[in-house]
Image (tube, rainbow, N blue to C red; front, side):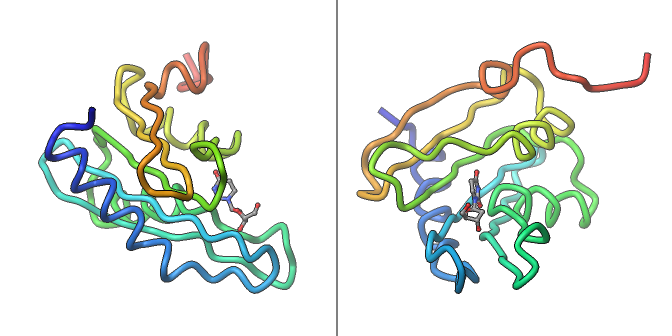
Length: 133
Ligand code: THU
C-alpha cells in the first residue's frame, strides 16, 4: 500500500500523462519525481517525427528537476497506458542511476491507475555505470 506522499506522486504522474505529446505511438507516459529537499517535478513523453529524438516521460521529469538545480532525487512514480505497471526503458534506468541512490523508490503504475509495482533504482539497473573511477 502506497503511503500518503507516494499517493500524491502517483496522482501527479497520472495527471502529467495528460500532456504527453504522442502523435506517433499514442502511448502516453507521465512521471513525477520528488527531490531530496521535497520539491516535486512532473514530466511526460515528448515524441518527434524523427522518432529517435523522443524524450521519455521519466527523463522529462528528471531533467526538469536537474535543470532547476535539484541533482539529488529521492522517489519517482511512472504511469503508462500498459495493462501491467509500466517498465521504464533502459535509457531512463541509466538516467535514474545518475541522480537517485540505488535504494530510491520507483513506483510503476498500470493503465488503471491502481495497479502498482514498487522497485528500487538499484533493482531496475543493477551494477550500473555511475562514474569514471
Ligand atoms: N516511453 C516512455 O516515455 N517511458 C518509458 O519508460 C517507455 C517508453 C515512451 C516513449 C514513446 O513516446 C512511447 O513511450 C512508446 O515507446
